[in-house]
Length: 445
Image 1: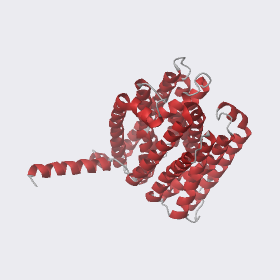
Image 2: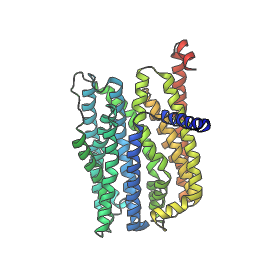
Image 3: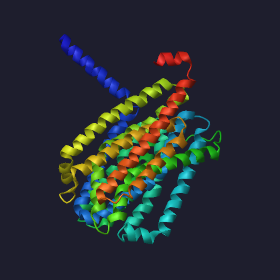
Image 4: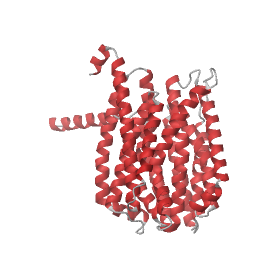
């Protein structure tokens, strides 16, 4: 091999190592599983869009958005806190068993409450959101406890560093849902409720299968964690998680409530655009799942230099991804949308560019929020996401064209959260620097 070839190989190796070094351990298997999950999600939504058409697809898109707001919005806090806490105290530590059991109790109570509220308020849900379909309401009620179990299992596996079964769980849900939809299509099913019920059943089937296959280790209770510690942490995380899910998934709901009567296909078309433009955000889930436990371990070890370096690299990577995403939306976005969902699902280049920018801005906010959670700044993280939701709601009051109105509101809300969370993280980093010994700071520089 020539000297130039060796130099090129060495340069490539260093670049690859630097790129991998920007990501927390466990990212690779999770990224592979997220890719599988993403492909199957796109397959499910694309298949159902073509079978149902824009008008019938609209209530399914509302179910999809509502389940994602309630499910991950309510139970990702449990996953994050369980994973962070187990990583901090040690998966086999004396507090681990109590943390797991208290988290399961909270998840059970919350899911039971949400299902009860949905059943009590079934009439307005059926009338205004689900197009009168009881099957979609049933799917919603099945999905909530199923997602509670899913996120609790994810938190347990992440806290124990078992990212391979975590990856199985992440990919299995999408596979079950897509295979079920394909079988329904081959059987000639054309009713929205038949496809909607898969939204509820898929996470239930996946969590049972992975739990049986992986046999997760439930540590014994040796010391009891105070309820106050669990509730306070989860409460702040709940505010933040619901805020994030609103900014991710509330677009179709807003379109349906504002202009669904005049444009019955609007919610379905906007969901199609969101699904297409949120490929980077969807893939970021793999990084987010491994990020919080790793940063929590750094915080517990007072390794502030590595903490700052990891966050900086991640934000730079997100910036580059944002530029590529917007360029792709402007150049090939409309053609890709029609190819994936069908020629009736149309959005302009401006629509897709704004949706992409909002999605990538949310990635920056997620990175900052995850870093804050890892160092016990739950309240600051929750307030940052709440600020974004308030701005989103206020921006919806602007009386512009329906799609542009919602898209600008999503972008404004995402920017507000990113700025608030970034400012809180910068304050935390400055505090870390002030508390470090002078020798440590000099070495880190």
